[in-house]
Image (cartoon, rainbow, N blue to C red):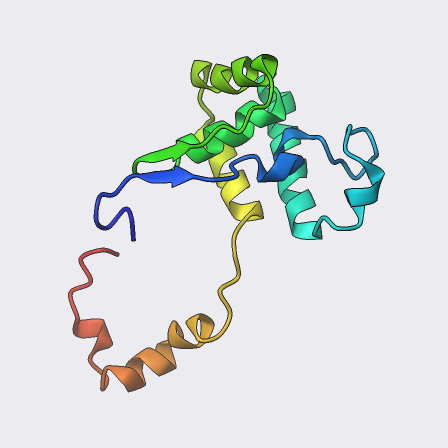
Length: 145
């Protein structure tokens, strides 16, 4: 909706409470507290794994990759930085020094894709569109497609 109305978005929690910094890792190599490990959803860990993989490809910390992923979304997106130390702030600001490739962005978008479920899955089927639009859906000029 923000894109449609040309509104800027300030993204809260761009690093996913530290999950996208590589702090919590399946292989145990992260610095995150073990007490929180069981509370992290598998989907979030999948996303974090992809961020860490791309970070290794570009030679940058996962936090910078995650911030760039947010920054490079279409429209005007500004991630809020929640650094608690000067070192973290400098590290986060270094995300301005590089960009992710379209392929890297696509991988991150795919792993983080949200399944909309019902009614969205139902409403996109050709049969339902045909019924809802009285057989005229294919004749409608869909200028945003």
